[in-house]
Length: 59
Image (cartoon, rainbow, N blue to C red; front, side, top):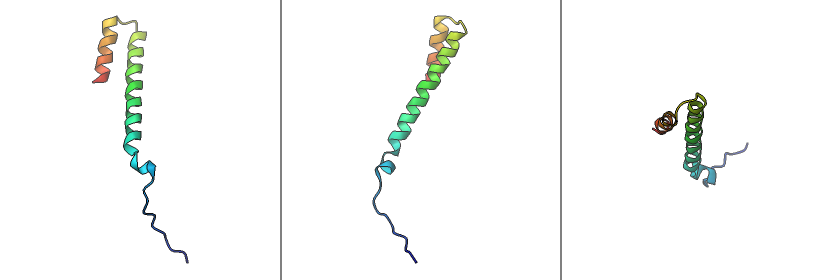
């Protein structure tokens, strides 16, 4: 019979989970805002409409 061995060390991956979440969240925000701006610009909107959509996407 083998016994379970408790591993007291925490690995680096467990300690930097916040960094992974921050990077993925920032990437998601950049991509979604950029795609919103491209979509509005492709609809032949005015420059003010594109700017307004970009600001609205950031909020």
